[in-house]
Length: 292
Image (cartoon, rainbow, N blue to C red; front, side, top):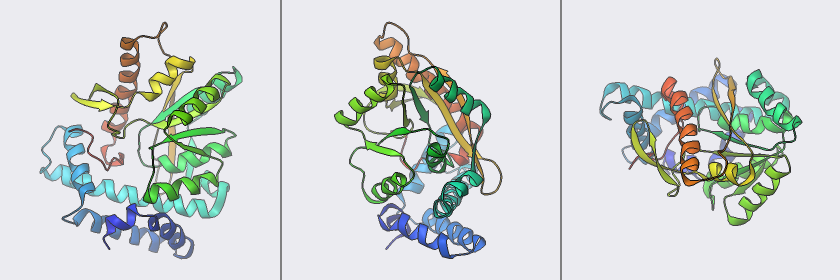
């Protein structure tokens, strides 16, 4: 059984949560770093190849460059550390989550202003360190949210979605039904959240780090359909074992809705992702090839 298989299977989250419940903090961190290094060193690791290729584009270097090799190692270690903190915090409940993850005041005030004004919002975020921990903190901030996830989740994703339900996060794999529910929620002043950097085999070609990449634009379509703004947010490390959500800028869809307007809105989101990822490329948890 390979490290990559364990990480992607239904056993991964269950085992991780169990180990962090019984292992001392330092021991859990050492084990996570060791598993990350083993995953990276595996000659069959598709994820390692994907991370190298993605970072090469982000940094404008060859995938064989030692700088990319070092960044790739840090990506795997940072991801492992964030999952240790996620499972440890889940074991401790909402109070433990609040100790690990905080919201930047600008982000929280932006969301609250929209809610007080009776407007729904589409929260979009790249998969950077702390993403999963931040998602679970929404309920503790009084934010009921529908999270749109990949269709037909398998393995670890299915287990993670069940765990998220414990914290009041309504996970709805993307389908016609879940999109209709999202539209109703937004029109009634609710919140919908989705990641915007994972390749899904759909969308339209946009410019991402100077290269064409097919990007999902479902969030932009929802904004056009409902009039709800897109609120861009990202998470980053804020000291050892701590993370913070920042951002909060509201992006409005052009009226009347057009194909060009859709493209401009989606590209505006991508441009903000570029700024976040380029500032800390070793915190971008993208384990799938982003460019063909």
